[in-house]
Image (cartoon, rainbow, N blue to C red; front, top):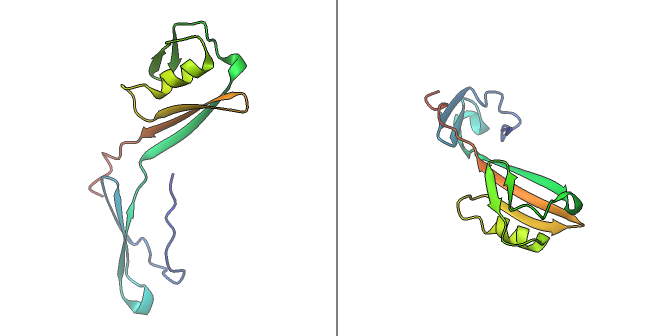
Length: 121
């Protein structure tokens, strides 16, 4: 969720009119600086970023594949380093990466969120 705040504290009519198209937002105001109307444009962030932290001791390195959400990672080796390489080399899926930090496997997942269906407001 994103919060849009009026750029001018004195602008009591900020948001009186709103239009959304794809990932673009236009917010109108009838009063602004010098009593003139204004139109503000914003680009909505349509990505969701999440991070999953898994202790390395909880990772089973003896299985041929690992399921990560909807992704299946086929293992090329039996070390944590080979698993990280396999995750980072996923060519069928974008937006996932893996690293090691403080004895944990860190998965960073970026997913796109569709904004269709909210246009025409």
